[in-house]
Structure formats: structure tokens, C-alpha cells
Image (cartoon, rainbow, N blue to C red; front, side, top):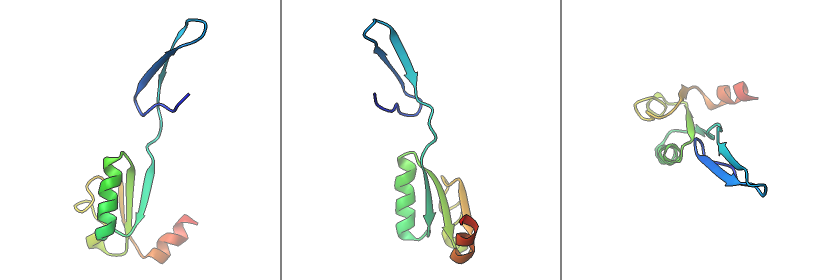
Length: 88
């Protein structure tokens, strides 16, 4: 049996002739992107198009903001050192 896509409704018939319906309810994968420069922007755009939840961390406000990453669930401006202490 395979994992159903988010919101997809699958069905199959058992050996006994019963029809079974399966609807996938999964959490989208999350990309925590450290760095919102040109590579991060392209990576974030791709991740968003693939259905990922995106979070951006950068120490420069011009590279971590809702205007640059409108699809990001969170844009964090902090030093990488301070951020790394928060996640450990």
C-alpha cells in the first residue's frame, strides 16, 4: 500500500469484495532555510511549488522578510549564532 497524497482519496477492493476508501491527512514537509540570499530565494521558490512549508532565517532584514518570501510561514531576522542556540 502506498501513502496517499494530501487530500487525495484512494480506494481499493479487498479480496473479500469490500471497497475501502482512504483519504490522506498528512502534514506538509517543512523547509527551514538558513540564508535568504539568491540561492535561498530559488530554493524557497522551489520548495513552495512542491508544497513545503517554508521558514526563512537570515541575519539581514532585506533577505528575510514577507515581501521577499510571501509564501513563508515565518521570516526570522537574527544572528545565526543566536538562532542556533534557540533550536538546540
